[in-house]
Length: 359
Image (cartoon, rainbow, N blue to C red):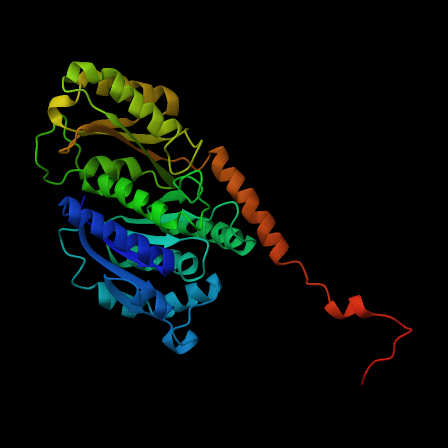
């Protein structure tokens, strides 16, 4: 699936670069262009992809300081500049536009929904948002920002693929320590999804193409991605259980939104050496996904890769009714409530009638 990536904010820029690099290194040619947009000049200077600084008159290149309302205003005011920068990158080959953003900060959480609105107004191809939710231990302002951003971006984008920061970092790492790990995991999983339908060495028996991805995301709302891999036996007949095992791990332990299993639509992609992929295993795994997700619309197919492992990649559409989303929204509402409570007057702590004021 050929796409143009637009990273908004610090996290969005870093993930966009990781996605573009992974696509280039793997030779998928799915990423047709990549642009990072930010209000913080220092964040852009650390990137190797094309960049655009916005809000120079408002914040002087220093960022919006977590103020996502200001981030949205700046994106709205400078939408023309962003569109001009994208002009020429979005060609007739592009099958989708993907906005990448961390939803907890200021520029990304405010700018992504506004940019999705503008892109949908101008272009006929789908506009997706790849949004990253803050982890539980990140500050309350990030939770509140992400709650407001998520509510808005789901309305403005054709579909929103969510990544929970608590999902894809090593168990012995904090979220802060694991940012690079999380970004690389996102690049690998989303990169494989975007590569579906591109010309790869090897011939798949049941081809996965771009329409499968687009149709899985067509209902809109919130989507998630699951991934797991296992060592493959040389004989495909010996890989029936390996394929079903990888699929189970991808859905039950490897999704970007842990425990979000119920879905409206699903796509199962088995990636690996075509000679090692068992058709029986793929069909058995696909049937299991239907039962587990409750979806009557489960697509499936192969993706040829030169590797000695078998990987299961699962895309779930319509997971917004999951307990994981409800849990996050409760956390975001509580954070928003706390942020809007009046701050205590620090002078009241020093009220003492027995002491005279110095002045």
